[in-house]
Image (cartoon, rainbow, N blue to C red):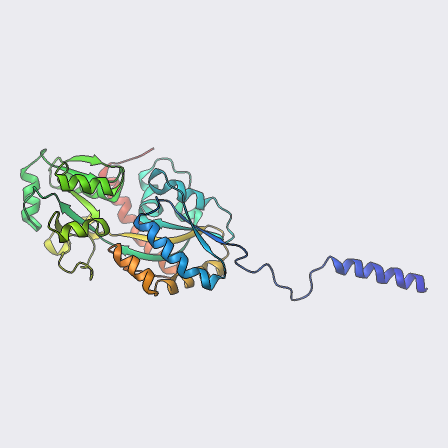
Length: 328
């Protein structure tokens, strides 16, 4: 009898040894450093904002947030990398609307679907583009500017930082609606585009305020106006294109930056990351980076990000269809 009891007791202890103790917590999140993927080169505006956000979020997470630059294909390489990463909350994306929203309408073949393969965490910032002209063009606005372009059919050019980018689609739309037949000059980045604007090799372009505002302030570039519905506090003297009567679809749109994670990331992790991102956007260092980009803080919940995304997507689809631009 004693032997039988001892045997049963040994079997029970052996079984219990393989069962987690009641109330034992799962591995706490995060369990290791997070990677914040920036699909653009180090030193750019998106990279600078990502690094400020990473530094602000790290203390509350209790783990470092390491920025990793994965460049290529106008942001698609890094975006795809995150879309296919493990959905455990340890890989994030700081993305631009170009790759997160517009790419599916531009590309016939895309290795990922942003809306299906990514979990939207939080909008971080949004801002307008500014339509600028080279020093050789007269300082015109509104209808006078549109008439000037139409009267010089086939004699002017517009720049962009790549086929399918906002400056390309907006410039093409402007050229088509005014029958201006402007030549498109794509560049390998915004900086060389602006340098050729300064030198007069290209006549006009839609550019970011971060790179163009110093030249506008110095009188070396002329600002026709901003896209979007309101002026910016960092550039109160630059009117919107809408208030000048240039109310085409591209002139109602802005660009945005947002945080995303792989689809399937647990909902509570997404909510926590979103809350931390919103808190980080209240810190002076992050707000300064956003202002330097010529943007405004847009820190949102995941639900608000998704609603804004779904509201804007048809406008971009319409603009891409009208442009006729399709990429493989």
